[in-house]
Amino acid sequence: MGLGRTLITVGIVLVVLGLVLTIGEKAPLRLGHLPGDIYIHGKKTSFYFPIITCLILSVVLSLLLWLFRR
Image 1: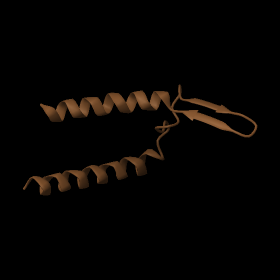
Image 2 (image 1 turned 90 degrees about the vertical axis):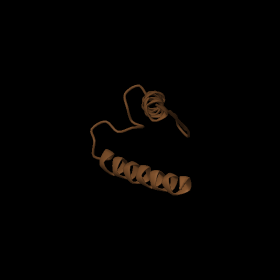
Image 3 (image 1 turned 120 degrees about the horizontal axis):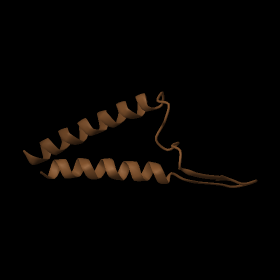
């Protein structure tokens, strides 16, 4: 019974994530391209570190995990 519920939960999470990624492409501010993300472009190399995106995802995931643990 536990494995079945886990698989259903994982499936629902994947569907929601797929919808968010599909709809998110049309949003004015996309994750990974937020103001505050560091992008350095050189002649032959580039460096990208999405620091603000990481912070936002960390807060959202922390809140979700806190809610599910209650």
